[in-house]
Length: 162
Image 1 (spheres, rainbow, N blue to C red):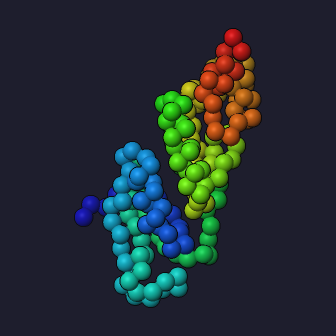
Image 2 (image 1 turned 180 degrees about the horizontal axis):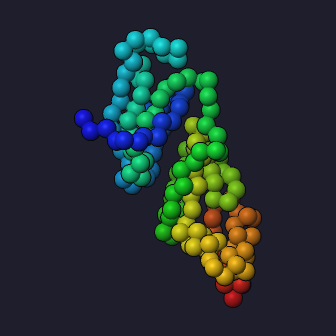
Image 3 (image 1 turned 90 degrees about the vertical axis):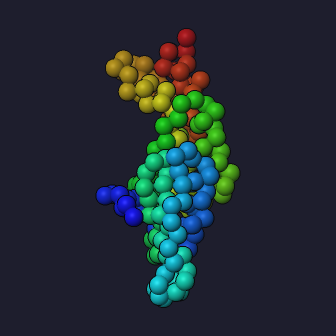
């Protein structure tokens, strides 16, 4: 078995496998790679329960640990997904939000397990890092008013409404 040198470990309250399967169904280059059952009882479960799930999200190796309810995800960690167009932006955002997640601001949303996602069109990243600081500021200010990113509105603000 080939183990990656670095893996993101995400804490779940008994539903790591459900989360991993959702991510695998939603994002390309994603998969559920292995499901491991506890060899004995542990504080959050019993022998035979799913203890860990090895999965990949957009090519990034992850491990879901069913550790119980002691810890929760927070916005200090998020997956940032670069999208090519509005259709891709809508598809990922809507999949996360419609599966028990919640909308937030500036391209952020949260999945039903509390994990934060930034669904970020490449157009937005390029606009807010533009060397033309006035154009970057217009795009940034437009973004600050959005939940899900509207690429056409970002492009219009970046151009200066032209």
